[in-house]
Image 1 (tube, rainbow, N blue to C red):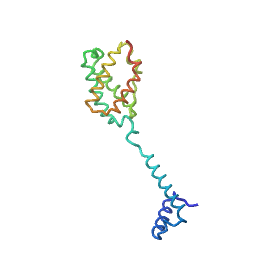
Image 2: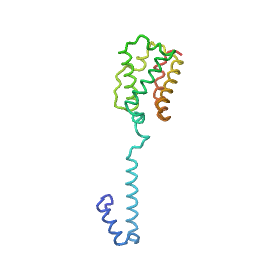
Image 3: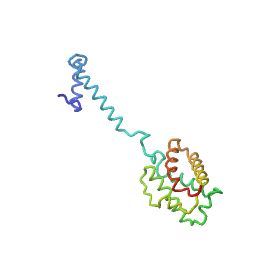
Image 4: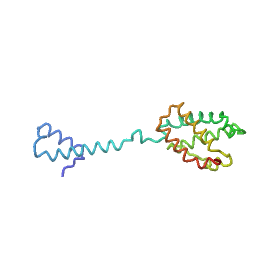
Length: 176
């Protein structure tokens, strides 16, 4: 049986057939079908084996750690200066603010498929007692959307992040 997956045999045979002008002869018809099938299979393996843009992790598509950190900084700046949400940051020391920021970066990085480890509390424990309302949630979501617009985050990635964040809503919102 012919080993068409052996590249040396394959190319030597193909070269001999071209030189001898025997490609179109009836006895080589089966051989050509096998070659065509092998070439098709090879290309299929190559194409399926390559990672496409849409298969990359959300972390990579967002731009990696630095991009997530920049978006987080902008988002926190919006939260802290918002008249309805600033109350959640009153009384935090600079060190505590830095820890909150780092927890958000690490959480998003981790959940987006990046290399970060989130070592903070659960979302339920981290937000317990803050009495975050549905309205607070909606304002924060709007501010996150504004941040994404500022950084030109594509719609697909924006939707994925919102889906990820929305899955946490029941653990964060305490008061309706």
